[in-house]
Each structure stands twice: as C-alpha cells, then as structure tokens.
Image 1: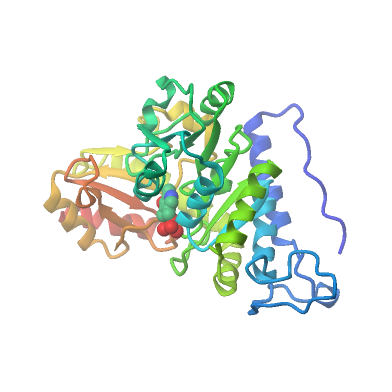
Image 2: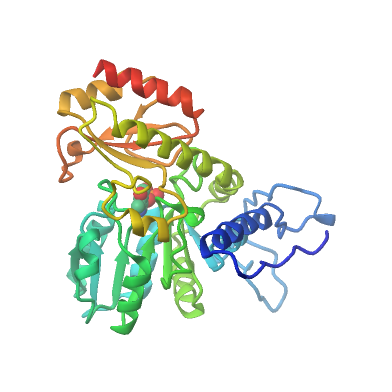
Length: 387
Ligand SMILES: *Cc1c(COP(=O)(O)O)cnc(C)c1O
C-alpha cells in the first residue's frame, strides 16, 4: 500500500479553508487505515474478535493478554478515531461510561468541578450522586454564562457546546485559556458536533468525550462512547480505569460503530446542510414562533459559531404556539420520529418540556437526519400547516 500523504500545512489561505482541508484529509486517511492485520491487508472490514483470553508466551507482554485489557476490534475502531481526533482514543460501551471514566480517573475529594447546568442531564446526576458524597464539590454554570464565570479554583471545567436543548454556545478557546491559567483541566463533551464539526482538542481542551450513540455511529442501533486526549498522562489514566473497572465495549458493538463511522462524513454533511436549509425556512414560517440554530445570523452567538464550528450542526430548536400544536406537528410529520435521542439517519423530534427542561411548552428539539432535503422539508411544512 502506498504511503499515506501527511497533512499539508497552512500557508496563505484562511484558517477555515485549512481546517476544512485538514478534516477532509483526516477522513480520507481514516477510511484507508488498515491496522487490523490480515495477510496482505486483504480484509477491508475489521474482524469481530470474540474472545476472553489470548494464548500467552511464557513472558506475557503487550495489550492482548486478557480481554479486559484489549481487543483487536476495539483497536481497529480506536485507531480510526485516533486519526479523526488527532489524539489517542479509548472506547467505552456508552457515552456515560466514557464521561464517568474521565471523572473517576481524575477527581479526588476536595476537587471543585464546574459542569454545564444546561448540558446532558445524566452527567450532572453522575456527579451529584457519586462524586459529591465523596467530597467533590460540584458546581454548575449555564453555557452562555461561562464567558463571565470566574474559573479560579477548579480542578475540572466541563463544556458542552452547543448546549442541549437550547443550543447556546461557549467559546472553547477562551474557556480553555482561562481555565489553564487558573490551573484547571478542560473536558469537552463534543457529542453534538462530532470531531468533523468542531475540534475541541485543537482549541486547547485537555480531553474530549463523545456519546458515539448519536451522530458518530449514526444508525440508532448501538450505545457507545469514547475519550480522546493528547496527554499521555490523562489518557493513560482513562485506559487504566477501563482495564481495572471493566467498563469495556463488546466487540460486536465496536464493529458496528466502526462501520457507522466510515460514513460519518457524508452523513454529517447532509445532516448539517439540510439543517441549515430547514432552519432558514422555519425562521420565516408563520406557524413558528422562534428558531434557534447556530448557523443562522439570528443566533446570539452566530459569530462564535462561525469561528468555532465547521457547520451549524444537525440540531434545530424551534418553538410552536403551545404544547398541543407541538405534539400535533410531531405526530403529523411522516419523516419525524418521536424520540429522545438525536444524530441518527432518521430525523426525529421531541417536545423538551416533557422532561422538565426550562423551555416553553411548545419548544421542540429537531434532529435532522439523512433524508433527501426537499422531501424532508415537504414533510415538515405539511405537518406545520396541520399543527
Ligand atoms: C446521549 C449523550 C450522552 C450519554 O450517552 P449514552 O451513550 O446515552 O450514555 C452524553 N452526552 C451527550 C451530550 C449526549 O447527548
């Protein structure tokens, strides 16, 4: 196999064009990565290795000593994710297992942690239920208020941008610079944007976590997660945690995510392009009271979105008149599945007030999938007329 060309380097064109090219280059390399050895690299797909033990020489060494330590199917996926993140990656059986691994490997009694008050709810439950009783001081801050928040005295600052479901933004580079100056580590939950849509490690974050359950796998058929870091000390701590505690992915699930990942670039491009078109049209639709989408100039942090994100993402927040019209809209649209997750090939939507989110009763989070854009819009427009 010919050598894969290295990244080109920025020259006179602008940083955004360079970032897009670097992303494209990474993805092409990912697709042609074949570290799962078969004779002559003949097999395109990685093997699903179902084993609990490995034949060991008299002096065991390396990863494949016992299957809680390592598995060749995880390795194939972790190698591919490492290309995409530009960072060593450890996989987990769910997004929450990945987040918990970061907390458990880093936090000690007396540490102060700052979590987003408008981020993924279970992350806060995890901290409150298991870390606060052990003496970790758990504090929260709204994503849009992070810019004004004093970061002195924290061990760890966690960012989730865009926030969920209101799609507020935080400036990752700014928070990282201030957190580092104050001696804190920064963890970014990059689930909603994926490494193709936003690159927290390039912006200074110490650790990225992702629920690959969502867009990264994209087919709504598996739960999965990963942690990436360019710090050997930090990623080593996460690797040791997984090996000791046993929160390990199944080989079949890892294989499914590897398969999903190979189409991430085409799926995510379609999803984000459709989301922009649909957000623009929703914004002028008489039935819609308001639309929040980072790719629209009406978003309060649109300028930041343009600097920090490679697209506006695949999630749209929209508000209809009330609970009943929101429910009617979702039920009437043939291409919107009523579901609480997002990032899949099938568009889905849900009224978030049903979970107690601090949003209007008619507030809907729309996850734009891979349907052809005009067909999807027709379905949405027809359902809005019926709402
Ligand atoms: C879904 C999600 C998680 C949790 O992932 P699971 O795979 O369900 O454990 C974490 N963070 C964000 C932002 C999510 O959307």
